[in-house]
Image (cartoon, rainbow, N blue to C red; front, side, top):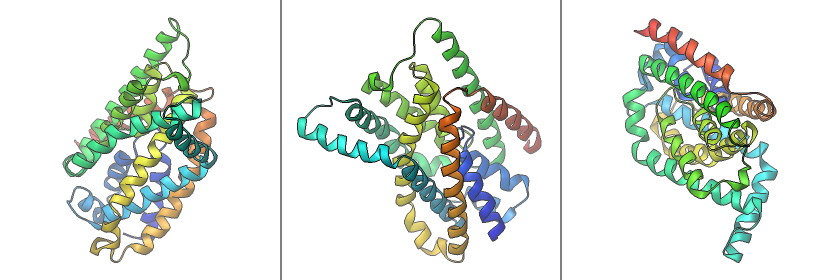
Length: 282
């Protein structure tokens, strides 16, 4: 892997991990589209330097999210210990931290059991293109459903979300193990379906993604520190810096964007790009 490729893939990871257009899908499609054969050949391998490279990018993305939401996470950590001492969640912050815990468990367990198998099975350009198109359909249908639901019921506050509903939103993250399905997209849609506003659904999605992405990176860290990391650690550092910066500015943009805007532009993008890529790789 060249340093140029590392920078491009780092920027791509930082943006597409948070934009609802699938980072894993783009990390499969872009190298194949530009004939980066040294990268493409290792994407679906059981062990490879490319997978070790992705470990660094995921850790950098999680760190960027922690920095952006640092005040929120500090408040949530205090609320967690306060709720433990009281043995109940009373304030909105105390409820939010437990909602995040309930939502993290399903994706964490399934990811631990099946991430490796699903990645090696579906991390191929044609499959990623198909799932990216499906991702666009999910965003489109979710947005239309939310618009119709608003006519029947008002928006719900995040603090009023039930724990089982948070578990359902967390479970939706499992689909993101398929290259082309966006983690942020699927969780935002799940939040919209439960009646949340775009802003609350997006913030919950980004907060929820932080421990999952960080845990996945730490869990795979031995791949980077072991033989698979030999010869690419410089590229990992450069790519991770690019990913971290891109992720920080992406979440900064999106938290403002979702105050007034919808998922529809991202749905159109995924449908268009996914459709074109299907015909290209078929």
